[in-house]
Structures are given as C-alpha cells and as structure tokens.
Amino acid sequence: MTPRTAPLHEPMTSRTAHPPSPRNPPVTTRTTRPIPQESPPVTSARMLDVGKLFAARLQAARARPYLATALFALHAVESRLVPTMAVDRHWRCYVSPAFVDRTPVEELAGVWVHEVSHLLRDHHGRGDRVALERGLTGRGDRLRMNIAADLEINDDVYGDGLPRPEGAVEPRTLGLPEGELMEDYLRQFRLGPYTQGLVWLDCGSGADGLEREWDLGPEGANALSTEERDAVRFRVAQGITARPGSVPKGWRRWAEEAFHPPQPWRELLGAALRSAASGAGAGEDYTYGRPSRRATVLPGVVLPALRRRPPRVAVVVDTSGSVSDAELGSALLEVAAIVRALGGRRDLVSVLSCDAAARVVGPLCRAEGLTLVGGGGTDLRTGFAKALRATPRPDVVVVLTDGQTPWPRARPACRTVVGLFSRARPAARSWDENDPDYVPGRPPEWARVVTIG
Ligand SMILES: [Zn+2]
Image 1 (cartoon, rainbow, N blue to C red):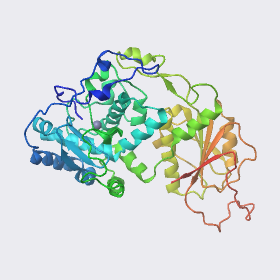
Image 2: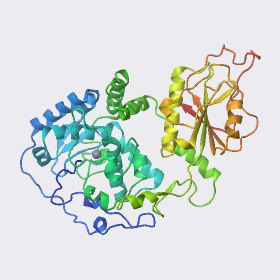
Image 3: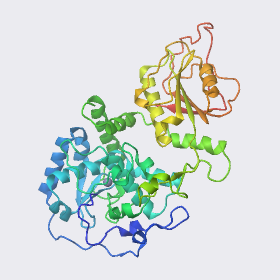
Image 4: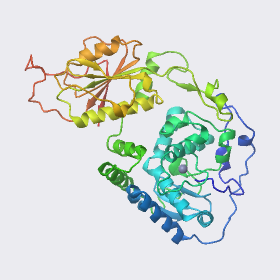
C-alpha cells in the first residue's frame, strides 16, 4: 500500500490504463502512456523476515487492541509479485520480503492496520457493488476505488502510537474533506497529475474486488470461510461497542453499522429520483462534464461538477411511546446513512419527530446531535402533512415507524419510503386512546416499504 519507495518498474501499471471516454477524457499523457506488461523483477532473493513482520503485527495489536482479533486472523503469504503488502477477500495478506526489509517495524505496524481495515470495512464487496451500480468497468476505476478506500481508512487510522507510513494517501492530499466513505470519495476525484504518484498503489483484491495475479483464490490454502470472516467482524464490532472510549469515530460508526446495516438509501432515493424526473441523466448526481469551481483551486485534481440537485428528503421519525430507544437509535443511524447517500448534504435533509403532533427537529445540523422528542400516541398523518407543507418541498418523504399509525388516505405528491422497525409488535396494546379497538393497517400501496434492522 504505502508508496514509500516506488519499485523500479510499476508492477500494476496495467491497472492504470484509464480508458478515454466522454466522461473520462485523458488528462495527462503520463497515466495513459504505453504500459510495460512484464512482471516486476525479483528485487530481493532474501527470505521473508517473518520475525520482523510478526513483531510489527504485535505492535499493531498493542496500538489498536480493538483490532487485535482481526490482525491475528490474517494469514500472511510471502509473495514477490506484490509491491508492498496487499490483502485478498479471503483474509490472506500477501507480503513482499523486500518491502519488509526496507520498512521500519513501526511503519509496518501501520501497514498491518491499514490492510486489515480494508477487509473489516468490506471494501472488496463495496467495490463490487459500486462498480455494478455506476457501471465502473475500466481498470482505472478499480485503482480509483483503491485510492478512495485508502482515503476512507487513512483519515483517522494513524497517530496515537501508530506512525503514518510515509506517502500514505490522505483526503487532504487530494484537497478532500475527512470522514467520508469510499463511495463518496470515488465521486470526487479522478486520475490525474495529483494521483499519478499513486498509480502503482496496490492494496490487493481485498481493497477493490479486482482479482490480482498473486491471489490464491477461494480454493487456495488458509482462506477464511464466509462464516469465519463474519465472526471476526462481529467480534471486532462487539469489542468496539463494548468499550468505545478510545476508538476513533469512524470505527465506532463502522461497529454500529456492523450490527445495524443501514438501508441502501442511494438506491432507494435514486429510484425515487429516476421515477420522479425524466430525461437523460436523471438520477445521476454528478458529472465530470464541467469542472467545478474547486477544480481551479486544485490544479490536477478534477472534481465533479454538480449537474443536478440531489433530492430533498424529509424524514418523519415516529417517536410515540410504542417506539423503543433502540429503535430510535436505529432511526438515527438511518438518518445518518441518508445524509451520506446525499453526498453529505445535511442541508437537504430535514427531520420531524412525530407522535400525535409533529415537531420539526431539523434542518439537520449533525445527525449525531439530533434530539428526538415525543412519547405520546401515534398519528403520523400530521407528520406527513407537515413534511409536505415545507418550503422548498421535499422530493422524497421517508417515514421511520413501528407501523402502529393511521396512514394518509391519499397518495402524497412525492415518493414515500416507509422504514418499518423489524420487531414483532405485542398485539394486546391499543394504540389509539379514543378507539381501543383500532387495529393499524399495513402501510399503503403507494409507499415503498423496507424493514429497518
Ligand atoms: Zn489500502
């Protein structure tokens, strides 16, 4: 991973080919120059210094005890094809003996943590999904995914006993904000002069889903099964949730979501958008067609210009007495995930807490800082009405509820997504003080209904 000392040849330059297209015009001749196809030379005939490698892992586990289970679950594989260290989705870590030789132990510790972070964060699975969703099929796209995944990891992984490996790419390297996810970073840069120093960066198929020549594959030795991988993730997440004290925010969020994976809001809101708007490009938030204003501030980094406004979303959260604190916690995680799906545009999300009366909580300043009030009976119709009266009007209304509510009779003017808390309801309680026999109906036909974990 760490572009500390570039190899003589760029071993993965075949991945850097950046196919010219209307959306990806070539920006420099450097990234599209003819590519040497031969394998990298064997740079060291020495044996892998296993003692040094494992001393570094121990140091990594001491510096980040909450990741220890994952660090020790990795199976090291010596490889002379890999430029530095790289992982595959089966939790193998391929290690270059020459890289271990030339890298100080404390920096190697940082690399261990970095590589295992790709696997815990499922960058390979997410890379596959984002490639499918956005039609990212070029080999250069996978390099961009690797860089974007590194940005997600590196913004808070170093320091506090773990030196930042020299040359590790961070959001500020590309003039981008910290604290975002790979999917978001991926929208905000493309290969160009600023990233050409990273063209040989390679954290392996575990970082972006693209198979590498050194991969041993699912049938090879020492692969972790899907169940074992889940068990490792679960244990790490459990450890973080139990003792969140010194754990950075990014990891705390990861651990919360490992237990409550949020809805695929990009898809849910995107589908709403595509059906609401017509014409080419509907649902596509960004384009590289025009450079954005920030691009002129950062020569060499081409930032996408916003072509069409992401949707305005009104979230109505059921805060009636029948909703538990844990469910309200899940609701807040979903709100945070909606904000991320909108590229971090908190200003586009408003939140109403609603029992029998609707109270406006947002515009959203910080998802984490929201206070939801309520506790009375439930009638989400007031929340609907209030959301739809807002100016500017929302493009999508999201309702997070246990479903114990009357629903509006008429289809609202905009798309509606209903997130139902998944628990089974005790049937004996009455939900309408004025009508003890009231039995709530299913959400109406016109709403897209999803289950909130
Ligand atoms: Zn990486």
